[in-house]
Length: 509
Ligand code: GLA
Image (cartoon, rainbow, N blue to C red):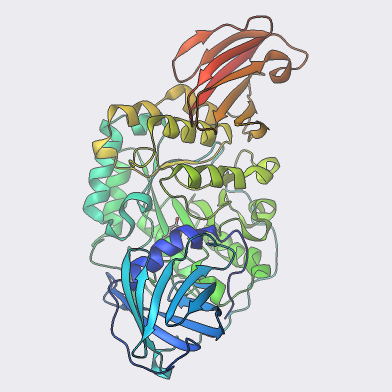
């Protein structure tokens, strides 16, 4: 069993914490064991999954005076923690992934740990051997070789994914109504083609190794047919570990069988999420483990976009294409908050040289329209994802989009920047609170975005000599006001609100 120690485990800081929160509420009861110390193994019962299984997590803690270290292992993950103890009171942080605010706070009282995990109550009892997770046989990953490019994702994939908004509440009916809305809202025609079902569709694996759906998805083939009948494509989700991040059965040991089934159902996209693979494999096995599914997908003969989700560990941008990957996450899970969005895009910066047609860096799905950022912040979000040639996978409710949300997600001039066939990922230059991102375009021009990271309005100035060295500006257009603008004496200035963006497309003479 191995613990994630890589700093790029933002996924755990964000998604995982959310996930742990889900799993620990409501918690069971406790028994005493460790009298006056937190040292020992504790078990917290979680929710009942949609496939009838019961979630649980084991806290393996070591108290040394006021210092606490250890791990928390759920069915779908394992994370390192550290914390403080003051009398009976303890506070637990994620080591390297959640240093600022404790995600578990509680007391050791009457032999049980009781407290809050974020805003959910939890209780943990001393664990017995019956609570331990079963040990699985180690499967040696294959020797490395190059998986041939599948010819897909020549521009960054666009579509919709269920996770950001619905998490485990996604079901067949929701997907169908979302598909209808993708068509009626114009999302499909704007290029958002993939409708991706994320985690929690899984049922149980039978004695023949067949992984069934749970009752939320009575007939995947029929659902895929429906999605295809609307001119869209459909995506599914699994993990190379025994369990997904949401604790559901995953593809460990069943990669080829699962790939065949996904293809037979008619899937066009697979998001493959590391999750509990960390309890089996160390990070030096990331590449061969991902290669195994890359091979399995290829041998189905169906064109399936392969999305690696391992939060940017192990230099994935360097070997992603070798395993047949078309996109790979570069960060942990995004949250619908300015800081999280900016953090994710900045983490993606070092990967810029590795983006290109067929293989893209993915700073996670869009939060535009989910309600916790301002319109300016969402315009910045959409601009940054487009300047960096990131996949545009909407994560909001397409059925009820406001006009502002529509004006952002359906801005065809901005989408064209993302989808530019040259496939270059912009990198930022910082000047005080202003950050300037320049993306070379196939027509010899550039897109330039100036983001105001500060708390007050600022004036952004862009110079033609920086944007188009050795060339002249032929024309320029503000992609959010949809107006042509003029460079005067070789520069253009505009006022940019706090957390807003100036986004121009500049054509060269
Ligand atoms: C991880 C991924 C998320 C989502 C969840 C599902 O946290 O990073 O995007 O897929 O798992 O459990």
